[in-house]
Amino acid sequence: MTQHTRVRTGFSRDTTADEVLRDVDLAGKRAIVTGGASGIGIETARSLARAGAEVTLAVRNTEAGQAVAADITATTGNPGVHVAPLELTAPASVASFADSWAGPLHILVNNAGVMALPELRRTTEGWEYQFATNHLGHFRLALALHPALAAAEGTRIVAVSSSGHLASPIVFDDIHFTHRPYDPWAAYGQSKTASSLFAVEAHRRWSDQGITANALMPGGIRTGLQRHLDGAATDPEQQRIFDDYPWRTAQQGAATSVLLAASPLVEGIGGRYFENCNEVLPSDLASADGDADGVAAHALDPEAAQRLWKVSAQLLAS
Image (cartoon, rainbow, N blue to C red; front, side, top):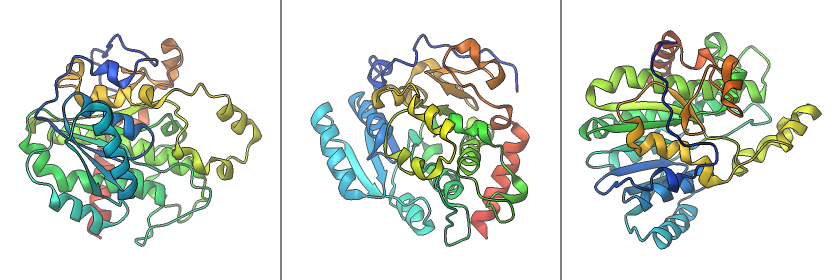
């Protein structure tokens, strides 16, 4: 990995999203949060709205989105919270969402995701569903919104990854489990490695346009994301570890997302991986960060990032 000064913010795993943005004024800024109607997406959107941003919740369930938007407006006093339909695995839905966007976009939080589907599931294109949702859908969305991102000043893209990325690099020879046996955690890990690599390459390609991109591990938060776990966990020890995990609140889980989305502490920073509101060490050294999992070299590999971008563009064009 490239050597640089590691970003330390003074915040920690216990910091909340509201605390991160306490003195940040986002008036006049426009943000999109995918998956903004559940889990940490709600609190990410809420804190951005509380800081004054106009926030659009990009969601599959617009009825749930409207309820969340109303709650965010009620708790923040910000009427500029909107809802728009987005199904990341449906190209027409992504295109419709992007086509309906007008004007600059200052913050794009790629937050939506699925985890550990117990059985192999494919999209209509034949793509493995976790890779298609967590990576390819967001990749398509970012490309479609690129003009709006480039039109804003100091634009930030936030890619929500996971410590699950430690389980697998991108297996370029068989991304979609056509030949190898399907494993829920390997598929999830690969998709979250892809989220990080997307941030690396997006920053490399677009930083000269004022667009920065970073990835993050939000920490363990009990949300609907874990709904498939019982079917996926075949190892009792793995299940025990999951049950004993030091879970945090959704406000704490959203803290690193909003840090990367809006904090002046990371102004101009890109292509990096954060956890507990700080840039993390490589995974083999992460014990120095206490409870941080760290980042695998394969999730920040610039060559893999360039290759993934090329492969992803080819898939979308096929």
